Image (cartoon, rainbow over all chains, first blue to last red; front, side, top):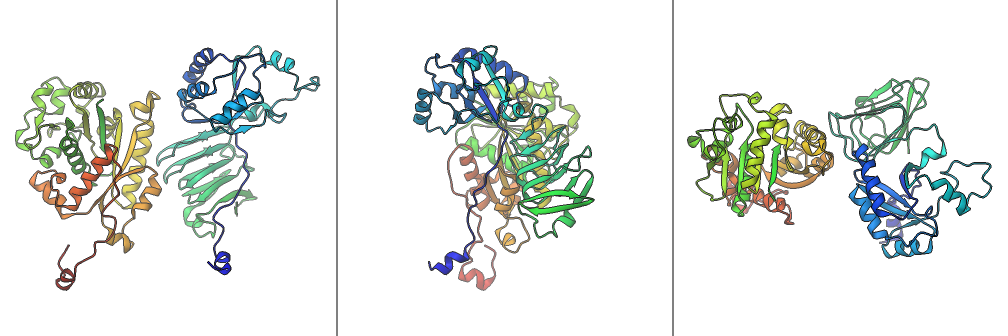
Length: 261
Length: 271
């Protein structure tokens, strides 16, 4: 292959940074039996949330005094309840070794970003303070983002395909879809809509009148897009040069802007 | 462990009954005790395709209503030891079926049969709903044209949200895509959707591609499931699909245009 050929080929990949809201299971005690029971109770309340939910296992809040944790058993337990472990957040030496043995990625211990900072707490990393904070809870499941800004509602995250005839409404929050959206399906959100798959249905963001809402999609093949009631149908959309491409859609005045992502 | 398999599509006339007959017969051929149940009450066809229409005494509705026992209503296939048919009623309509009644019959069938193949009626109303409600696996039959694909997509949505498995929060129904009446020449001419197009839109596992074939119509009229015609391309394609359903990895066939021989080109004979 000549250098000229190489120049002719467009790049095959692109590296991108992305912020995702993800479920973190923070373990306060090394008691798998107890965790199993409590997790079962939590799952019973929202079975649909716990199906193939990606999960970060956080062991960095485990007191140093606790015994070595059986990481493999813990992951199997989570899997049974529909939680799929993506990575580990840990600081203890033995946990890091266990993660390495299982070929599991390790994230740095929880920083200040996802914790509400208490100004009076001058030593946020002191294990005594952490232990006191956690003593009431055996385990807590939290959306990392809730803690950061208390009044933000968690986004509605959909991981299975949305088929024609189905309607999903994210009330008072963003809607994130990690699967294809078929023609005839309808996505509604009071906030933004993100679709990480082909978007062939209808997407209506800011349905309660939020004109700041935006729609992000990886492949714009939509039947209709609307922000705060200002809409465009496929007939107009498919004339856009960005049809079938990764775009974001926002509203300026009464005009829907489609721009490349 | 016995399995309930539904053959469904949303759209009518795409080949659900042909497929039910072929897949059911294929499973029985491979030694699995199988029953095919016709859910199309009022428009029964399965018995014709299976060639047992003259032996129907009692039907599905009779069993649901307790007017006959299962053993009275089950029709044994004359060709295969392991194959039975439960015919639909021609004189009633789909309201004659109730969820409790269907559940009772299916539970009873599961005790004796390895596979219960449910031939769904077209549409998304009561009959189609009851046919898929108790299913463990679904074969979604689709023709390579846009309206059939859209209806299949709708049906996949219902399978994922309105089935017993979905309502109880169990593992979802395993979905298979079966593309029927496929004609590679018309795909090349741009008159028909290609396999990749349909797979991309529906995003489920492809169980098989059945080529458009004269053999299907012939088989239907003779009351012989087309899978028994092992000389025909459609019969072979169904046979591959059954093997894939049972977990075998087989390459897809009949996706490309057949090369015509010199003599065929000369005399314009149809392949």
